[in-house]
Length: 126
Image (cartoon, rainbow, N blue to C red):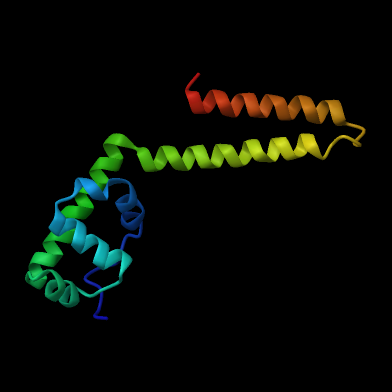
């Protein structure tokens, strides 16, 4: 493996999962090989039969496209928010499940129900 062309932004690999199909084949291959296979620019150039500069340009333009798509569409960010909210809802449900013998059962039940309802409102935008 050669030296990195610059510090890798590993958000790109994450965004590639969402928006990779929007890239041209050359950019898609370059991004995939650079971020997911950890190949050097020279190795990628040989693999897809373009110059090192062509690989560098394909990666830079591909990164810009992925970041722009996330800025405009926000799918990755929305999914992250949903995952975090579902984790909080799971914790509220566990609190309900395991509080049966707690002297504060009704308070825990009420607070957990409120927490779940608030998370749902946040997710659906009410």
